[in-house]
Amino acid sequence: MSSQKQYELSQPPGDGISRVAFHPTNDAQLLVGSWDQQVRVYDVDANRLVASHHDHQAAVLSIAFGSNCAFSGGLDRRLLAWEGDYTQTREVGRHDGEISAVEFVSAHNALFSGSWDRTLRAWDARLHAGAAALKTIDVDERIYSMSAQGDLLAIALAGRKLLIYDVRRLETPLEARESPLKFPTRCVRLMPDCTGFVCSSVEGRVAVEFLDGAGKQNYAFKCHRQPAEENVDLVYPVNAVAFHPVHHTFVTGGSDGVVSLWDPDNKKRLKQYQGYMSSISSLDFNASGTALAVASSYTYDEGEKDHPPDAIWIKPISESETKPKSRKS
Image 1 (cartoon, rainbow, N blue to C red):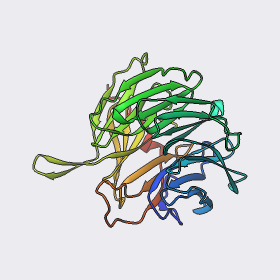
Image 2 (image 1 turned 30 degrees about the vertical axis):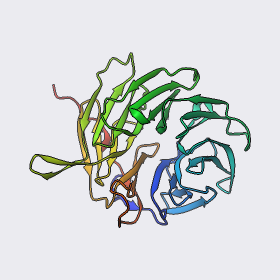
Image 3 (image 1 turned 90 degrees about the vertical axis):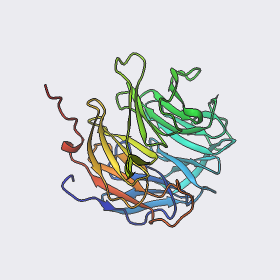
């Protein structure tokens, strides 16, 4: 697949693309949530829209695959499950505010939702509408982004706060820290080996943070900037982060329409993919790491204006691109 050129998925969403997510084991299935109130699943190998539903009453902000279904939440404050080979939906539960993040932890068959109502909620996804959340955790601020990996759940809040939970013990967070970035967090993603996380900000910076006991040094760097005039850079939000599942390098996507591939251990940029016509709103690698889904979708950083159509690109990825380079002795 790596020798092929990237291609655009047919029948893309009709409004802003909030998130793309590959199936955890099926490389061909891609789940997409968008501002047109729809959730879609594609067969990327066949370049075909498999199914969609319009059961949300407002924009869909987050989606996640479950063990044999898909979940979604958004501005209508409802958490929906999409079941029966994507033929029927049901309501799992509700928040008092907009649902901004949804994550499914397969190892524990646990569903989590984060909201602007300043709560994290854990659900039994098998229960029908009206059932209370298994646990509701009050947090200090609105939840902007979440990431699940292994037994861990990372949460980025307004006010630059970051929380790390062990999903087996939700009473208190494992760690609570303030982002080293000076501006609001746009995205947080846990490392595949659960030793740390990467977070990005609206001001063209990324932080690589390690958990206590990992024995590695935290650092941050500038990215997604373009020279505007002498000694001045045009700075773009970094909207998306995704880790390669095999080599643990990661990509960032910015409102400059650029995707950059980074080697976190050697602190180097390995590759830059340019030419996307709009902001990069979301990114995800498939389970084998052979393809990257790129959502090119205006994120309204400059307010209402004419912009290119929303698009999803599938970019074949080679091992040589994503493998960290050996340190020179």
